[in-house]
Image (tube, rainbow, N blue to C red; front, side, top):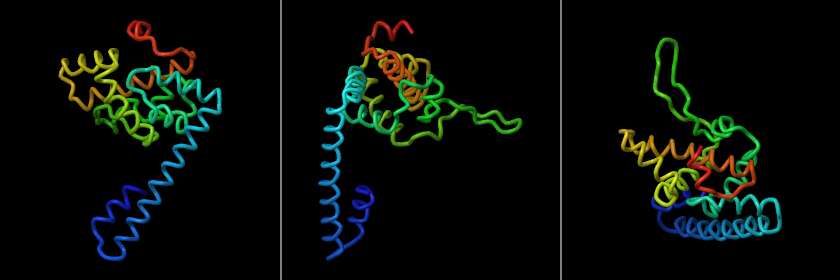
Length: 178
């Protein structure tokens, strides 16, 4: 809603502009209040706090990513790696029809989780040694950067799912062996 209102702001003048600016101010204040309530709820729940701490132990995963995964992906840790990848929409799926054999693409799933996971993976491709090495290896093989980053999103999600499933914090030596 914030984005929609900011876009509308550029197209209006006069008193309507003032109304939109007031609405934007209210939306931003309300968003801050809701984020504070969410953080308080996480701190008050031992289970949620433990899960957030597990997720944040992985380099590249911060407060926004861990909160989003907690709220929008409660299945994390309870599904197989294929199921969780499909649920989020980062599983490579064949784009075939009849005799036509297309490339594998990702589609569907939970867009909000995928968007947050994209940003976390972007950070992880620079700060997480496992994801960084995987990303560089794919780029050296000639994969386009977006394709390599999408593969890294898939890998990061699988790692996070395994961490939550086993209740084990980030351990790069275990991930590198897998």
